[in-house]
Image (cartoon, rainbow, N blue to C red; front, side, top):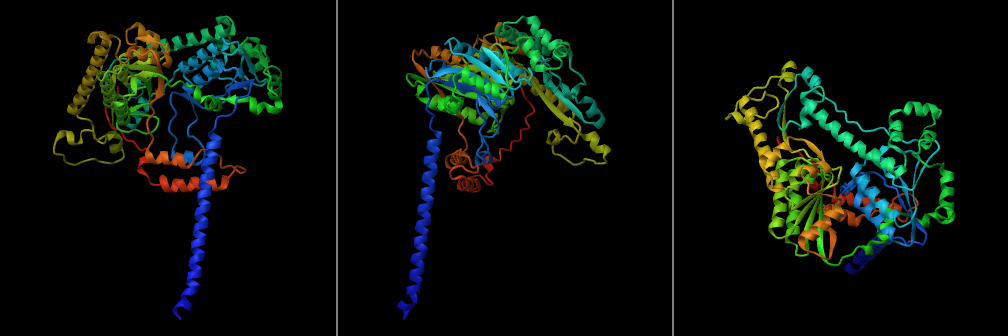
Length: 602
């Protein structure tokens, strides 16, 4: 009887167990398929003879890509549109000696914000590429000033017939809040060391100070002079023609009947006006790209780097390049900033790695926390104490805290138009007691000591607290000057003479002893090799590690398109959603919330 009753249950159990095995096998098959598909799509493309490298950057030029948020990965994207400068330079450099590449096309329509230092680095690499005898053509439907500056490196510039070249000069206008704050009754108390430290002026003035106006005028004139000279030389037109185009644009537009494209061509800024059909014909006749096989012969930067990844030499000793990009903050910091703790940890790891013989710190930062800057400087000093040379390489900006970091290096290198210096310190304290009183809100209470509530913005800042904050700022400034004096082997008075919060261009900073040499990252790496006594070396990137769960997310969710029609698109999209649920939901490591209340910022 018992055996008769249990027989149906055994049958049901075998059915359930069979279904479990089938589902497990299906899931395993899906996982293996996903891995194989990700590997297949990640392979570098085959480069055919007669291919053309298309440089079509999408987004802003950066030194290092900002880590994507988990949601960006699950949507198949990378987050903020960014183009890593070194990727572009390496691709152009390799293509110059690659017999399969017959030319270079620059397409700038999607190029975002780009500092002139980074654009100049690309232009210099393109000039070297042109020495190989391969043609370079630039094409866009329209050019803004940064895009056009890059395009002028080409042999030939093409513009759409309904496009324009927007050359407008340089300007810097700020918004000043003092009158509005006065009307609201908000008092912003400023503590500053350095008469040129203008960051605080919007809260204390209704216009630009004479000191800030003079420095800004000098900086803008220097950059504009370089830009217009480069355009004039590249296009083989007189400086007066460039000036007329920028200044007398109304007359020139009238002469062209309002046709901005014809205006640009008449002034010699572009060579040809082509619509999309004419551009396609040009690619066929002039660049030799068969319309039927144009996709195969058109090689983008990412694909070309993947196809030539074996070209990077790995012989000799290693020189590590660590990029410090963004504002300098205490602790870990959110993505896109220079967190003091992870940067120090990475520098210590490089110090203890026997494979690394020297380190280049690539700085692209306007400054930030004095405490974090000093932490990083000390970590760089520990590398030097361990016998490993350290070179600071300045990108577009290495000012204030960025320069503080640089004082920890054996040598400092900058681009001619790097913004650096700004050796000064400031602090801000908002007092909102008057608006609260006007609203009928009273603040009262008790404290065990005067400092217990001294930094409460609901109450006026006491004279003692104000004096203490100013003394703290002055002390930090004195420490900053001492760091500069020690690093540059000059007196404190000499350091103060070039400090005071003043910003210098790289060329001027070198003339004043704040920078050792002018050059880019490659030259800085070569300098590190020289200091380490290396005749053979290779460069490695010391990237900040991502949080563990984000690493797992990247491994589980490869960048495959979930769009309709893609192989496995629907289940892959679901896999992304499941991965987000498992790995990122309510994960404090990915909230990236950061609150910094430090009163001092160099």
